[in-house]
Length: 312
Ligand SMILES: NC(=O)c1ccc[n+]([C@@H]2O[C@H](COP(=O)([O-])OP(=O)(O)OC[C@H]3O[C@@H](n4cnc5c(N)ncnc54)[C@H](O)[C@@H]3O)[C@@H](O)[C@H]2O)c1
Image (cartoon, rainbow, N blue to C red; front, side):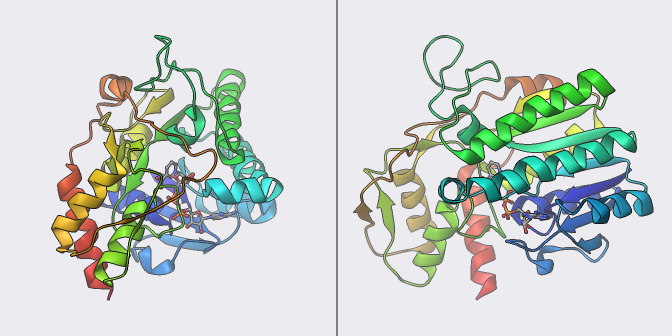
C-alpha cells in the first residue's frame, strides 16, 4: 500500500514510518517540523514539509501520490500547552484532521488510522464496572484538557465518516508511549527528561509523591499496532497499552539502575489537574487486531538510555 504518515518526522510517527517501510509499504510523510525532525526520517520515505491545515497543499499531495491509506500521527500534543492555546490546538488537532478525513473520503482510502490518546480521553473517567481502572473502550471518557477533547471529538468524526461514507477507520488510544527519538515536550516526556538529566549528572525532579500510575508502552509496539490497524479489517476504537500500572518513582528507580545515577530525585508540587492513575485494558486490540505489547519496561528503558548516549 502507499500510506501517508502525517507527523512522520516526529517521535511516534517516525517509528510508524520505519515499521511500514520494513513491511514493504511505500510511505509518504507530511510534517511541518513543528516538533518533528527530518533526521528521524528514513531516505526511502517521500517527504513533504507541509501543514495538514493547508488544504490546497494536502489536496495536491493526495492527487499526486495516490494515497491508499492514512496513519494520522500529526498533532499538537502537549496537555498544558493546550490549555494556554485552545484555538491553536483545535486548528491542528480538529480542523487539520478534518482536512485529512475529507481527502481520505474523496480518494476512497482503504483505511484511516488515528493516533488518539487513552490518558487524555479517559481523563478522570469511570470504567464500565463503576470503578475506574483499567480503562476499557467502554469506559466513560472525561477529558480534562483541550487536547483530550480535541482527540475525543475526532473519534466521533471518524465514526460518522464510517457510518455515512464507509470510510474504514481505527482510532488507537495510546497510553504513555516512550522510546528513542522522544523529546521532553510530549505527553510522556518524563522518561526522556529523566534520562537526559541522569546522563548529564543533573538533578531530577518528580511531581507530587511520585505515586502517580501510568501505562508505559514502548514505541515499537505502538508502531506495530499502527501497521496491524492499517493492514487488517477491524474498524473502531482500540486501547493499545500494556495494562500494567507503573508509578513514576519506579521508572526513576529503574533508570537509576540502568544509568548508574548516584542521586536521589527531588520532589516538587503536583501540577493542578494531573490525573493520578491511568492504564489501559487492551484485550480488544489483542482479539481484533492481533496486537500485544512485547517489549518489557526494563528493555525499553535500556533502549532509550542507549539511544540518548549515542546522541551525545
Ligand atoms: N507520546 C505519547 O505518549 C502519546 C500519547 C497519546 C497520544 N499521542 C499522539 O501520538 C501522535 C504522535 O505524538 P508524538 O509523541 O510522536 O509527538 P511529536 O510531537 O513527536 O509528533 C507530532 C508530529 O506532528 C508534527 N505536526 C504538528 N503539527 C503539525 C501540522 N499542523 N502539520 C503537519 N505536521 C504537524 C510535528 O512536527 C511532529 O513531527 C500525536 O497525535 C499525539 O497526540 C502521543
